[in-house]
Length: 379
Ligand code: GMT
Image (cartoon, rainbow, N blue to C red; front, side):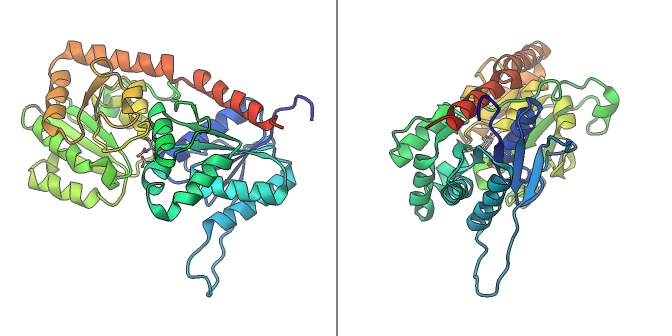
């Protein structure tokens, strides 16, 4: 219908996690740009705090159904069903599915039921590299990627890996993640910092979902080496299956008194705003959104050289990268930054500079809007 903006449905994971954060922040930006946006999820996305005005963004909850005969819930079917309702009732032109499965699969299903609208899929990482590698989902994941009307990936590393793993030839457009550097910035108020650390302590932060690929025990190992040399404190933010092991290791290494596990701490920008160093030790990371958020707050990053991390953190400029598992190397790099205020200042400034000049919403969001327009107008 002429040149009106496409109406967009966003299908995403709603809990704390990079893909849900990107989906939510993007949906809010797209809504602010004047598009009608409909979030569809099992719960309200955790960063969807903005009040919903008459023009949205709207949120539609996927209805669950427990029936004694079903041995398991069928999230793909219930998502496709709710999405079908939203597409039909609101005249949605385009569904943006974050994650190949179950979301792109559900979106394709709704597309074939409604016979209207296009599907754009954004790959975030673990759907392809972990779940995709698991034969159980191999055909369905490949199908979801191949039959989407457009596919994006959050890093070149992930796009390449996807092509390789599935032998996919189709175009996968790389659109990096973004950070709102007006919201994520350095906090200089000593009162805020005093809530978390003593003035003389170096404040080190890790944020993740504590899954095995995050190697959170490496975070503790690196921290123990740092803490044996200088006064330091570690804040572990997030929750997940490896949290208990990390806790035990911190106790075994004698640093439990200087480590705090804050759980799923919603106010992550405050902690990142006062931190001196961000640690990310993953064995696999398609982008590393939390590291980018730390960079916007002028925190240098010490990380593993995994997946898409080098596309975010420039080794030797905005932080240092080491081989996966090289805890001695990472500790060495961390101490180099924390002991020398000139290095620390230079890297912190370079980190923010990179976040602002490469990953600002005003650079990234238009790439998505252009992709929406192209995809919605495909024949
Ligand atoms: O890191 C996670 O396990 C969470 C995961 C998700 O699906 O929320 O994050 C993935 O998507 C983020 C946003 O694009 C990326 O910043 C993360 O690097 C990516 N995680 C992995 O590749 C392990």
